Length: 416
Image (cartoon, rainbow, N blue to C red; front, side, top):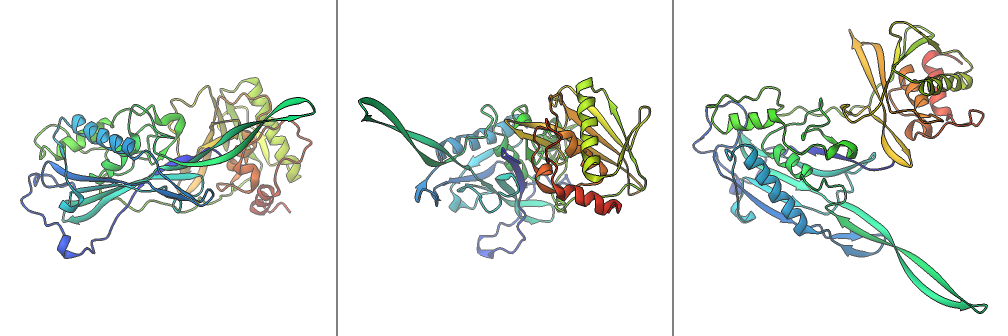
Protein backbone atom coordinates (compact mmCIF):
# COMPACT_ATOMS: atom_id res chain seq x y z
CA UNK A 1 0.00 0.00 0.00
CA UNK A 2 2.26 2.78 -1.24
CA UNK A 3 5.39 3.62 0.71
CA UNK A 4 7.49 0.62 1.52
CA UNK A 5 7.51 -0.91 4.96
CA UNK A 6 10.47 -2.89 6.16
CA UNK A 7 10.13 -6.49 7.21
CA UNK A 8 12.80 -7.93 9.48
CA UNK A 9 12.94 -11.67 9.99
CA UNK A 10 15.29 -14.55 10.68
CA UNK A 11 16.58 -17.69 9.03
CA UNK A 12 16.97 -21.17 10.45
CA UNK A 13 19.38 -23.53 8.78
CA UNK A 14 19.05 -27.27 9.50
CA UNK A 15 22.20 -28.95 10.78
CA UNK A 16 23.32 -30.69 7.60
CA UNK A 17 26.82 -29.32 7.25
CA UNK A 18 30.07 -30.53 5.77
CA UNK A 19 31.86 -32.06 8.75
CA UNK A 20 35.17 -30.62 7.56
CA UNK A 21 34.00 -27.12 8.52
CA UNK A 22 31.74 -28.07 11.43
CA UNK A 23 32.30 -26.36 14.75
CA UNK A 24 32.51 -28.59 17.80
CA UNK A 25 31.38 -27.50 21.27
CA UNK A 26 34.22 -27.53 23.80
CA UNK A 27 34.30 -26.40 27.43
CA UNK A 28 31.24 -24.29 28.11
CA UNK A 29 31.96 -21.09 30.05
CA UNK A 30 28.22 -20.56 30.56
CA UNK A 31 27.10 -24.10 31.38
CA UNK A 32 24.89 -23.01 34.30
CA UNK A 33 22.29 -21.40 32.04
CA UNK A 34 19.68 -23.41 30.12
CA UNK A 35 19.02 -20.84 27.41
CA UNK A 36 20.72 -21.25 24.01
CA UNK A 37 24.08 -19.48 24.07
CA UNK A 38 27.58 -19.37 22.65
CA UNK A 39 29.97 -21.18 25.00
CA UNK A 40 32.87 -18.70 24.98
CA UNK A 41 33.91 -15.07 24.73
CA UNK A 42 34.89 -13.11 22.77
CA UNK A 43 32.74 -14.08 19.80
CA UNK A 44 34.52 -13.99 16.46
CA UNK A 45 32.83 -12.45 13.45
CA UNK A 46 33.63 -11.75 9.82
CA UNK A 47 32.21 -9.06 7.54
CA UNK A 48 31.83 -9.39 3.78
CA UNK A 49 29.65 -6.70 2.18
CA UNK A 50 29.21 -6.61 -1.59
CA UNK A 51 26.01 -5.00 -2.90
CA UNK A 52 26.98 -4.93 -6.61
CA UNK A 53 23.65 -5.16 -8.42
CA UNK A 54 22.68 -5.44 -12.10
CA UNK A 55 19.85 -3.10 -13.02
CA UNK A 56 17.75 -4.70 -15.76
CA UNK A 57 16.04 -1.37 -16.45
CA UNK A 58 19.26 0.56 -17.01
CA UNK A 59 21.31 -2.46 -18.11
CA UNK A 60 24.28 -1.64 -15.94
CA UNK A 61 25.78 -2.52 -12.58
CA UNK A 62 25.19 -0.29 -9.57
CA UNK A 63 26.46 -0.58 -6.02
CA UNK A 64 25.56 0.86 -2.65
CA UNK A 65 27.99 2.51 -0.27
CA UNK A 66 29.34 -0.72 1.22
CA UNK A 67 31.84 1.15 3.42
CA UNK A 68 28.90 2.95 5.03
CA UNK A 69 27.20 -0.37 5.82
CA UNK A 70 30.37 -1.89 7.29
CA UNK A 71 30.49 1.10 9.62
CA UNK A 72 26.86 0.51 10.64
CA UNK A 73 27.59 -3.15 11.38
CA UNK A 74 30.55 -2.29 13.58
CA UNK A 75 28.51 0.39 15.35
CA UNK A 76 25.79 -2.22 16.05
CA UNK A 77 28.36 -4.62 17.49
CA UNK A 78 29.76 -1.92 19.78
CA UNK A 79 26.24 -0.99 20.94
CA UNK A 80 25.60 -4.60 21.97
CA UNK A 81 28.97 -4.76 23.74
CA UNK A 82 28.38 -1.53 25.66
CA UNK A 83 24.76 -2.36 26.47
CA UNK A 84 25.81 -5.63 28.12
CA UNK A 85 28.71 -3.97 29.98
CA UNK A 86 31.03 -5.95 27.68
CA UNK A 87 29.87 -9.31 28.97
CA UNK A 88 29.44 -9.86 25.24
CA UNK A 89 32.55 -9.01 23.25
CA UNK A 90 33.29 -9.35 19.56
CA UNK A 91 36.51 -9.90 17.67
CA UNK A 92 36.84 -9.54 13.90
CA UNK A 93 38.52 -12.35 11.97
CA UNK A 94 38.71 -13.53 8.39
CA UNK A 95 35.82 -15.54 6.97
CA UNK A 96 38.38 -18.30 6.33
CA UNK A 97 38.84 -18.65 10.11
CA UNK A 98 35.33 -20.09 10.50
CA UNK A 99 33.91 -17.28 12.69
CA UNK A 100 31.14 -17.68 15.24
CA UNK A 101 29.02 -15.10 13.39
CA UNK A 102 29.33 -14.62 9.64
CA UNK A 103 27.97 -11.22 8.58
CA UNK A 104 27.35 -10.68 4.88
CA UNK A 105 25.91 -7.89 2.77
CA UNK A 106 24.24 -8.76 -0.52
CA UNK A 107 22.44 -6.97 -3.37
CA UNK A 108 18.74 -6.10 -2.77
CA UNK A 109 16.60 -9.11 -1.88
CA UNK A 110 14.04 -8.76 -4.68
CA UNK A 111 12.65 -12.29 -4.42
CA UNK A 112 11.61 -11.88 -0.78
CA UNK A 113 10.38 -8.29 -1.12
CA UNK A 114 6.69 -8.88 -1.74
CA UNK A 115 3.35 -7.60 -0.56
CA UNK A 116 4.57 -4.06 0.21
CA UNK A 117 7.40 -5.27 2.44
CA UNK A 118 11.13 -5.04 1.76
CA UNK A 119 13.49 -7.52 3.37
CA UNK A 120 16.43 -5.72 4.99
CA UNK A 121 17.89 -8.68 6.83
CA UNK A 122 17.77 -12.39 7.50
CA UNK A 123 19.62 -13.89 10.43
CA UNK A 124 19.73 -16.67 12.99
CA UNK A 125 21.66 -19.68 14.31
CA UNK A 126 22.94 -21.91 11.54
CA UNK A 127 24.48 -24.65 13.70
CA UNK A 128 23.64 -25.77 17.24
CA UNK A 129 24.45 -28.59 19.64
CA UNK A 130 22.22 -29.23 22.65
CA UNK A 131 21.65 -25.70 23.99
CA UNK A 132 24.85 -24.28 22.51
CA UNK A 133 24.99 -21.93 19.53
CA UNK A 134 27.92 -23.10 17.43
CA UNK A 135 27.55 -20.69 14.53
CA UNK A 136 25.17 -17.98 13.28
CA UNK A 137 24.76 -16.03 10.07
CA UNK A 138 23.56 -12.49 9.38
CA UNK A 139 22.55 -11.52 5.84
CA UNK A 140 21.85 -7.84 5.17
CA UNK A 141 20.25 -6.30 2.07
CA UNK A 142 20.17 -2.71 0.79
CA UNK A 143 17.20 -1.16 -0.99
CA UNK A 144 16.96 -0.86 -4.77
CA UNK A 145 16.28 2.80 -5.36
CA UNK A 146 16.41 5.39 -8.10
CA UNK A 147 15.63 8.94 -9.09
CA UNK A 148 14.98 10.98 -12.19
CA UNK A 149 17.95 13.04 -13.34
CA UNK A 150 17.27 16.04 -15.56
CA UNK A 151 19.61 17.24 -18.29
CA UNK A 152 18.98 20.77 -19.55
CA UNK A 153 19.52 21.92 -23.11
CA UNK A 154 18.78 25.19 -24.93
CA UNK A 155 17.46 25.79 -28.44
CA UNK A 156 16.31 28.71 -30.52
CA UNK A 157 12.87 28.82 -32.09
CA UNK A 158 10.88 31.73 -33.50
CA UNK A 159 13.51 34.18 -32.42
CA UNK A 160 13.25 33.04 -28.78
CA UNK A 161 15.69 31.04 -26.67
CA UNK A 162 13.98 28.04 -25.12
CA UNK A 163 15.13 25.70 -22.38
CA UNK A 164 14.29 21.99 -22.45
CA UNK A 165 14.90 19.37 -19.78
CA UNK A 166 15.07 15.66 -20.56
CA UNK A 167 14.68 13.29 -17.63
CA UNK A 168 16.30 9.89 -17.34
CA UNK A 169 15.74 7.36 -14.58
CA UNK A 170 18.95 6.62 -12.70
CA UNK A 171 18.82 3.40 -10.64
CA UNK A 172 20.88 3.01 -7.52
CA UNK A 173 21.32 0.82 -4.47
CA UNK A 174 21.16 2.38 -1.04
CA UNK A 175 22.07 1.14 2.42
CA UNK A 176 20.91 4.41 3.96
CA UNK A 177 17.58 5.29 2.29
CA UNK A 178 15.37 4.12 5.19
CA UNK A 179 17.98 4.25 7.93
CA UNK A 180 17.63 5.92 11.28
CA UNK A 181 20.73 8.08 11.28
CA UNK A 182 21.64 7.79 14.96
CA UNK A 183 20.91 4.12 15.61
CA UNK A 184 21.54 1.08 13.35
CA UNK A 185 18.15 -0.57 13.96
CA UNK A 186 18.38 -3.21 11.24
CA UNK A 187 21.92 -4.29 12.06
CA UNK A 188 21.28 -4.52 15.82
CA UNK A 189 18.03 -6.44 15.18
CA UNK A 190 19.73 -9.03 12.99
CA UNK A 191 22.80 -9.50 15.21
CA UNK A 192 20.46 -10.07 18.17
CA UNK A 193 18.82 -12.82 16.09
CA UNK A 194 22.30 -14.32 15.66
CA UNK A 195 22.61 -14.32 19.46
CA UNK A 196 19.33 -16.24 19.74
CA UNK A 197 16.88 -13.40 20.46
CA UNK A 198 13.45 -13.87 18.85
CA UNK A 199 10.88 -11.36 17.60
CA UNK A 200 8.62 -9.37 19.90
CA UNK A 201 5.09 -8.82 18.58
CA UNK A 202 3.59 -6.94 21.53
CA UNK A 203 5.63 -3.75 21.23
CA UNK A 204 6.15 -1.87 17.96
CA UNK A 205 8.75 0.30 19.70
CA UNK A 206 10.92 -2.77 20.43
CA UNK A 207 14.16 -3.31 18.53
CA UNK A 208 12.89 -6.87 17.90
CA UNK A 209 9.50 -5.92 16.45
CA UNK A 210 9.51 -7.59 13.00
CA UNK A 211 8.07 -4.69 10.99
CA UNK A 212 9.86 -1.36 10.85
CA UNK A 213 7.16 1.30 10.63
CA UNK A 214 8.97 4.37 9.41
CA UNK A 215 6.75 6.66 11.50
CA UNK A 216 7.93 4.96 14.70
CA UNK A 217 11.21 3.21 13.85
CA UNK A 218 13.59 6.03 14.67
CA UNK A 219 12.05 6.47 18.10
CA UNK A 220 13.81 3.20 18.95
CA UNK A 221 17.29 4.27 19.96
CA UNK A 222 18.34 1.50 22.32
CA UNK A 223 18.01 -2.22 23.00
CA UNK A 224 15.03 -3.23 25.16
CA UNK A 225 15.85 -3.46 28.86
CA UNK A 226 14.53 -7.02 29.11
CA UNK A 227 16.76 -8.14 26.21
CA UNK A 228 19.82 -6.56 27.82
CA UNK A 229 18.92 -8.22 31.11
CA UNK A 230 18.64 -11.60 29.40
CA UNK A 231 21.98 -11.29 27.60
CA UNK A 232 23.70 -10.20 30.81
CA UNK A 233 22.13 -13.14 32.66
CA UNK A 234 23.33 -15.65 30.04
CA UNK A 235 26.84 -14.29 29.63
CA UNK A 236 27.47 -13.88 33.35
CA UNK A 237 26.63 -17.59 33.65
CA UNK A 238 23.58 -16.68 35.72
CA UNK A 239 25.61 -15.10 38.52
CA UNK A 240 23.92 -11.68 38.55
CA UNK A 241 20.36 -10.66 39.35
CA UNK A 242 19.30 -10.42 35.70
CA UNK A 243 16.91 -12.83 33.98
CA UNK A 244 15.41 -13.79 30.63
CA UNK A 245 11.85 -13.17 31.75
CA UNK A 246 9.63 -11.68 29.00
CA UNK A 247 12.25 -12.31 26.32
CA UNK A 248 11.53 -14.62 23.40
CA UNK A 249 14.48 -16.88 22.67
CA UNK A 250 15.72 -19.52 20.26
CA UNK A 251 14.45 -22.07 19.34
CA UNK A 252 11.67 -19.91 18.00
CA UNK A 253 8.38 -21.23 16.68
CA UNK A 254 7.44 -20.93 13.05
CA UNK A 255 5.90 -17.56 12.43
CA UNK A 256 2.26 -17.62 11.49
CA UNK A 257 1.92 -16.53 7.88
CA UNK A 258 -1.57 -17.94 7.44
CA UNK A 259 -4.02 -15.49 5.86
CA UNK A 260 -6.53 -13.84 8.15
CA UNK A 261 -9.90 -15.56 8.06
CA UNK A 262 -13.13 -13.67 7.52
CA UNK A 263 -15.84 -14.06 10.14
CA UNK A 264 -19.59 -13.58 10.55
CA UNK A 265 -21.67 -11.97 13.28
CA UNK A 266 -24.49 -14.28 14.39
CA UNK A 267 -27.04 -11.47 14.37
CA UNK A 268 -27.99 -8.43 12.29
CA UNK A 269 -27.91 -5.50 12.37
CA UNK A 270 -24.31 -5.11 13.55
CA UNK A 271 -24.23 -2.51 16.32
CA UNK A 272 -21.55 0.13 16.62
CA UNK A 273 -20.51 2.87 19.02
CA UNK A 274 -18.23 5.94 18.85
CA UNK A 275 -15.99 6.92 21.77
CA UNK A 276 -13.99 10.16 22.02
CA UNK A 277 -14.86 11.29 18.50
CA UNK A 278 -15.51 14.89 17.51
CA UNK A 279 -18.46 15.96 15.36
CA UNK A 280 -16.52 15.72 12.10
CA UNK A 281 -15.27 12.23 12.92
CA UNK A 282 -18.80 11.12 13.86
CA UNK A 283 -20.09 12.53 10.58
CA UNK A 284 -17.46 10.61 8.59
CA UNK A 285 -18.32 7.36 10.39
CA UNK A 286 -22.04 7.79 9.77
CA UNK A 287 -21.40 8.75 6.14
CA UNK A 288 -19.38 5.55 5.70
CA UNK A 289 -22.24 3.51 7.20
CA UNK A 290 -24.72 5.06 4.77
CA UNK A 291 -22.47 4.47 1.78
CA UNK A 292 -21.99 0.76 2.51
CA UNK A 293 -25.69 0.25 3.16
CA UNK A 294 -26.51 2.06 -0.09
CA UNK A 295 -24.47 -0.42 -2.11
CA UNK A 296 -25.70 -3.40 -0.11
CA UNK A 297 -29.34 -2.40 -0.29
CA UNK A 298 -29.61 -3.49 3.33
CA UNK A 299 -29.40 -1.76 6.73
CA UNK A 300 -26.40 -3.72 7.97
CA UNK A 301 -25.44 -1.45 10.90
CA UNK A 302 -27.19 0.19 13.83
CA UNK A 303 -25.76 2.94 16.05
CA UNK A 304 -25.73 2.09 19.74
CA UNK A 305 -25.49 5.22 21.85
CA UNK A 306 -24.82 3.58 25.22
CA UNK A 307 -22.61 0.63 26.11
CA UNK A 308 -20.31 -1.36 23.84
CA UNK A 309 -21.44 -2.30 20.37
CA UNK A 310 -20.22 -5.10 18.16
CA UNK A 311 -17.92 -2.50 16.55
CA UNK A 312 -16.49 0.27 18.73
CA UNK A 313 -14.73 3.25 17.17
CA UNK A 314 -12.18 5.05 19.37
CA UNK A 315 -10.84 8.37 18.07
CA UNK A 316 -7.28 9.20 19.09
CA UNK A 317 -5.40 12.48 18.64
CA UNK A 318 -2.15 10.77 17.63
CA UNK A 319 -0.61 7.42 16.78
CA UNK A 320 2.70 8.30 18.45
CA UNK A 321 2.14 6.19 21.55
CA UNK A 322 0.04 3.44 19.97
CA UNK A 323 1.68 0.06 19.45
CA UNK A 324 1.20 -0.64 15.76
CA UNK A 325 0.79 -4.19 14.49
CA UNK A 326 0.12 -6.22 11.37
CA UNK A 327 -3.56 -5.15 11.44
CA UNK A 328 -2.69 -1.44 11.10
CA UNK A 329 -4.20 0.29 8.06
CA UNK A 330 -2.43 3.20 6.37
CA UNK A 331 -3.47 6.20 4.33
CA UNK A 332 -1.83 6.32 0.93
CA UNK A 333 -2.91 9.67 -0.49
CA UNK A 334 -0.22 12.31 -0.30
CA UNK A 335 1.12 11.58 3.18
CA UNK A 336 1.62 7.97 4.24
CA UNK A 337 0.83 7.32 7.89
CA UNK A 338 -1.18 4.99 10.12
CA UNK A 339 -4.87 5.81 9.82
CA UNK A 340 -6.61 3.06 11.80
CA UNK A 341 -6.04 -0.17 13.66
CA UNK A 342 -8.64 -2.85 14.37
CA UNK A 343 -8.45 -5.22 17.33
CA UNK A 344 -10.49 -8.41 17.33
CA UNK A 345 -11.49 -9.39 20.86
CA UNK A 346 -11.99 -13.16 20.90
CA UNK A 347 -13.78 -15.17 23.57
CA UNK A 348 -14.14 -18.97 23.39
CA UNK A 349 -13.00 -18.92 19.77
CA UNK A 350 -15.64 -16.36 18.80
CA UNK A 351 -15.10 -12.68 18.00
CA UNK A 352 -16.99 -10.87 20.73
CA UNK A 353 -16.17 -7.23 19.95
CA UNK A 354 -14.18 -5.30 17.37
CA UNK A 355 -12.28 -2.26 18.64
CA UNK A 356 -11.18 0.16 15.92
CA UNK A 357 -8.81 3.03 16.71
CA UNK A 358 -8.93 5.99 14.32
CA UNK A 359 -5.74 8.06 14.48
CA UNK A 360 -6.23 11.85 14.25
CA UNK A 361 -8.91 11.07 11.70
CA UNK A 362 -10.55 14.48 11.22
CA UNK A 363 -10.19 14.83 7.46
CA UNK A 364 -13.09 16.70 5.90
CA UNK A 365 -13.96 13.90 3.50
CA UNK A 366 -13.03 10.84 5.54
CA UNK A 367 -12.50 7.54 3.75
CA UNK A 368 -10.75 5.12 6.10
CA UNK A 369 -14.04 4.68 7.98
CA UNK A 370 -15.50 2.69 5.06
CA UNK A 371 -12.49 0.40 5.14
CA UNK A 372 -12.82 -0.13 8.90
CA UNK A 373 -16.59 -0.70 8.81
CA UNK A 374 -15.92 -3.52 6.32
CA UNK A 375 -13.28 -4.99 8.65
CA UNK A 376 -15.75 -4.79 11.53
CA UNK A 377 -18.49 -6.51 9.52
CA UNK A 378 -16.29 -9.57 9.03
CA UNK A 379 -13.79 -8.86 6.25
CA UNK A 380 -10.37 -9.63 7.73
CA UNK A 381 -8.86 -9.79 4.23
CA UNK A 382 -8.61 -6.85 1.83
CA UNK A 383 -11.02 -7.12 -1.09
CA UNK A 384 -10.76 -4.87 -4.14
CA UNK A 385 -9.03 -1.52 -4.62
CA UNK A 386 -11.00 0.29 -1.90
CA UNK A 387 -9.63 -1.96 0.82
CA UNK A 388 -6.09 -1.83 -0.55
CA UNK A 389 -5.84 1.92 -0.86
CA UNK A 390 -7.84 4.47 1.08
CA UNK A 391 -8.99 7.58 -0.80
CA UNK A 392 -10.91 10.71 0.02
CA UNK A 393 -14.67 10.29 0.21
CA UNK A 394 -16.08 13.67 -0.78
CA UNK A 395 -18.72 12.69 -3.32
CA UNK A 396 -20.94 9.86 -2.12
CA UNK A 397 -22.79 9.86 -5.46
CA UNK A 398 -19.69 8.57 -7.21
CA UNK A 399 -19.14 4.81 -7.49
CA UNK A 400 -16.21 4.70 -5.08
CA UNK A 401 -16.84 1.38 -3.38
CA UNK A 402 -15.58 -1.60 -5.34
CA UNK A 403 -17.91 -4.56 -5.89
CA UNK A 404 -15.46 -7.12 -4.46
CA UNK A 405 -15.97 -6.08 -0.84
CA UNK A 406 -19.72 -5.56 -1.20
CA UNK A 407 -20.19 -8.94 -2.89
CA UNK A 408 -18.21 -10.64 -0.11
CA UNK A 409 -20.42 -9.07 2.58
CA UNK A 410 -23.51 -10.20 0.63
CA UNK A 411 -22.06 -13.72 0.46
CA UNK A 412 -21.22 -13.90 4.18
CA UNK A 413 -24.67 -12.71 5.28
CA UNK A 414 -26.70 -14.26 2.43
CA UNK A 415 -28.06 -10.86 1.38
CA UNK A 416 -28.62 -11.70 -2.29
